[in-house]
Image 1 (cartoon, rainbow, N blue to C red):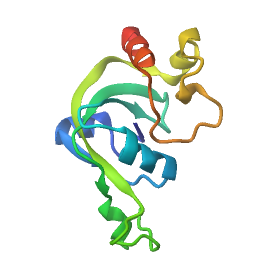
Image 2: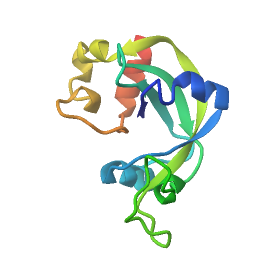
Image 3: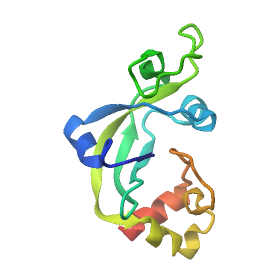
Length: 145
């Protein structure tokens, strides 16, 4: 799960301990929140749009999917005038800080790993803010730490 560190960083999550992962405006990610994620799942915290982009920590999923309130707030940058409170378009999940990695694992390093050639983050044109990670990819990446 990625966030820009100047918007919300791993240090912010460490301070806050728990946070709603809001602002998702992609149907594929919304469906992952709704259908695939489970309470207790672990996720990498990835800093994007920075130098260097990198996996910086681990967090856990600690809530079921529920409507993202920012979609109904006209003052929010995530406001969606077409979303209906009776049938909300956008969901979020709460995440909880687990730990920072011992070292950042950069995107460049991930791209250099032959075992990660099929890793979604390494695929050209990937613009998703949340991507699935297989168990073998997870274990391999943690082994790089």
